[in-house]
Amino acid sequence: MEKRKAGGSGLSLSRLGLGTMTWGRDTDEIEAADQCRAFLDAGGNFIDTAATYGDGDSELVIGGLIGTLFNRDDVVIATKAGITFSDGTRTVNATRHHLIAELDKSLARLGTDFVDVWQIHAWDEATPLDDTLSALDYAYTTGRARYVGISNYSGWQIARAATKQQANSMKAPLTTVQSEYSLLNREVEIEVLDAAQECGLGFLAWAPLARGVLTGKYRKGIPSDSRGAAPHFAKHIEPYLDARSTKIVEAVAVAAEGLGFSPIEVALAWVRDAPGVTTALIGARTGAQLRGVLKSEEISLPDIVRTALDEISL
Image 1 (tube, rainbow, N blue to C red):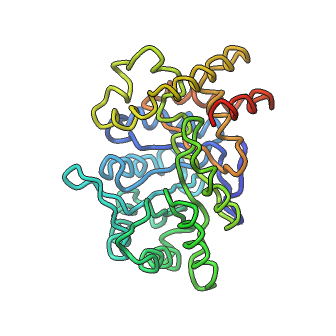
Image 2: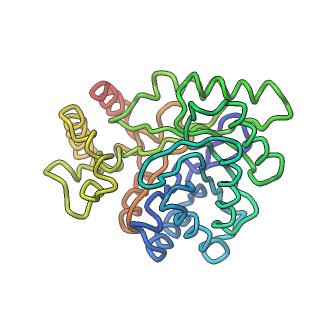
Image 3: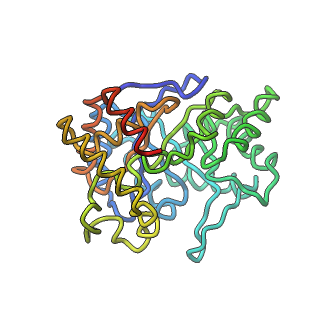
């Protein structure tokens, strides 16, 4: 699998990254190991998680694979902190105190002394930015994180954070920014991708298949075994089941049929090779599903198809 440098850093990431949001909750240890093995066999090296995924269980599962399925130094592990779901309510807390405490818990669950990339999960309006960034500095200078980044920041937020870090050689330089990006959600094209490029950050695209909608599985309803039927995921799927999304999904299906590919391959290749993208993060419930997604590595979209999808998804 092709490796790409993350922005202006020396960090090399596979152009597809393995997302683990379902691990420890919808995906058990056996399935997770099967997914990880398939991903590594395909040449991938980047595994992304977060402290909040499965309330920490995702990190525990990954920690169990270190030393048994792969050597620690052969894989880039990224995690995030700053979001909690106490009592089912989403809370953003990017204070230095909370972030550092969460990092130590993440390292304990992963069973490792460091993470390769540690990211702030979301912008915290209630916390001074310098307080948040000081946690990144601490993680970086103490060796707990080899690289640091941010996630779900707007364009101006990226520019402000990156500029603050770049202005002082004693501070940890930002390496990555992670945001949602797919044919059904192209909002990052307005400012985020440009900000990332201008600030020298690698861009990590999450939900490149629009939470599974671009696979075409919802064209005739909501399958009982899909994320759309799961109570904790349904609210995230519903926004992508409107008329506009349906039109785009149909266009992807037509393109796939004409090329002899699957809708998954077409939708994922579009994001993976979009200008400014370092890595597209893919997730699946089973190893069989992941192997289907990984087939996208075998294709590239003709320019005429990419242009047509660009136009219909505006």
